[in-house]
Image (cartoon, rainbow, N blue to C red; front, top):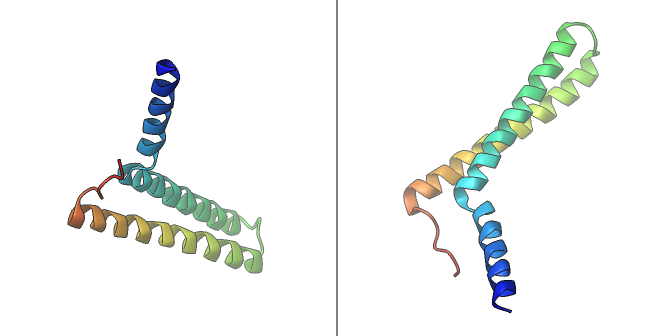
Length: 91
């Protein structure tokens, strides 16, 4: 029974670490970079004549909006971390 408890406590610790503010910030940074890369690929495809203007504008605007949204969230999270430090944990 003690072993099962320790296993569950370890799992709970791993899950809480994956939701830490620094982990969330890192995932936001990666996601923003990925959206930026996708928008650049879309632009490159348009410049090479592989995409028409309407498809380019729709796709490019969606990806850039997503990129900027994620960057803004990352910056806001960084400001919260700097201002308040790590938020108190619930355990």
